[in-house]
Image (cartoon, rainbow, N blue to C red):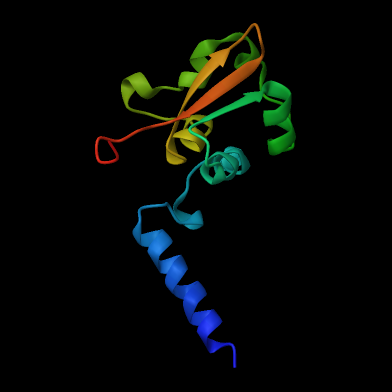
Length: 116
């Protein structure tokens, strides 16, 4: 009786996957996976989170380097490697700009040339 609903959900899921959104099992955000999911599901182009809000999302405290070093938020991108925290926002299509004094991070959507 509800076969149409099952088919509609399946078709919608297929369109979402075909659109390039990484499947859950394909995401390598490690322990920062919940941050990835949160950022992925936000429609806003800019998301501002305090360190406390990020910790609430993750369920654990950020490491000390996250509070003291801007480089922690950049990961090792310069040498072509990304840490699991950097993967969290990169896989969600975001960049991260930290404000250590305000203890907050601005995650901005990466705009591809296809969308312009």
